[in-house]
Image 1 (spheres, rainbow, N blue to C red):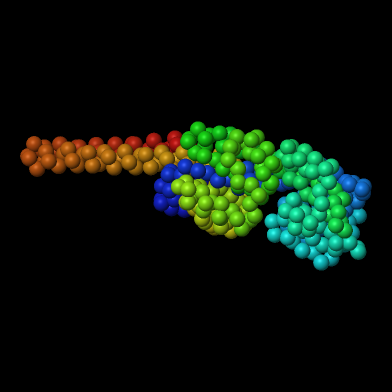
Image 2: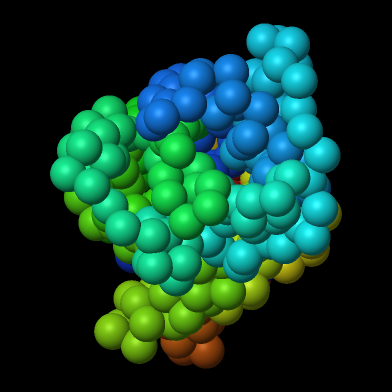
Length: 325
């Protein structure tokens, strides 16, 4: 279940000391669900209808979660015009006579929308629960908050723990705010988090780690991960991810089980160790036997037997890799 695109990539993976994980779709299921609704001055149905209208033109997974919830609640969604996606922040559109927006704290700061103590407390509470908060703005004021959560994959925590046992440093890379990211990382056993990263900043984050001397293996699955996968010393793509991520990677994992990444690293390390053992045996044989043959102390029959034994040893030693996975 592991596609390695060349022997040089197998060797590079064995030397990795840091593994950078994209969060959404790699550590998590990639299927966000709307889990909390906090209207401010309007009803919950009105808030959902407003959010669904704003997200109607977006392809983001959070937008899909909101639209799906609106369909389940059978709310009437108004038409939105002048739709605009604000890169890494949210969306803006005009609904009726009002200019509306939905997005994160960066979008609120850009729109100069004031935060009340009540809104700030609600955002803090969502962050502590590991929810991604989405603020809804209409006519310059916040009319509600939506909390979206993407469940962690069942195998993610175990895979991270295994990599830490192997001496690797796991790093989570995400566009979520620092507080939310830290909560999710703590549940998965990841100590180092790079949060608040815009899609075009992932490559720069990987490059910065490399400049500090880290040999980075990047694990991702989305279009936004392609540049970071190409930048990393070794790119690992989830087979359930996008074609562009798979194309930019050096190793592809079948399916979406993150445990396969740990298996790939273990196989690469064992392979490199076996190669070194075989090379040592080959050099040792030649250093020991050739002088004896030159001195006439080794008959042709014994030399042939020794050569055969050397070859058999190399093959049997290599066959131990069958149990590496």
